[in-house]
Length: 48
Image (cartoon, rainbow, N blue to C red; front, side):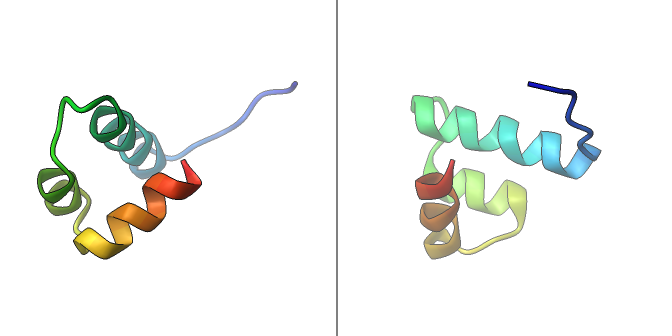
């Protein structure tokens, strides 16, 4: 595998998704942090 270049926004999104996936952060709080709806958060988690 090679290098991947990610923006700060993408890195922040992955960090928040990881915290929600681990249960350290609620879906609602994660959605608020990423400025998305709870429904969109579930879609992002499915793809994560």
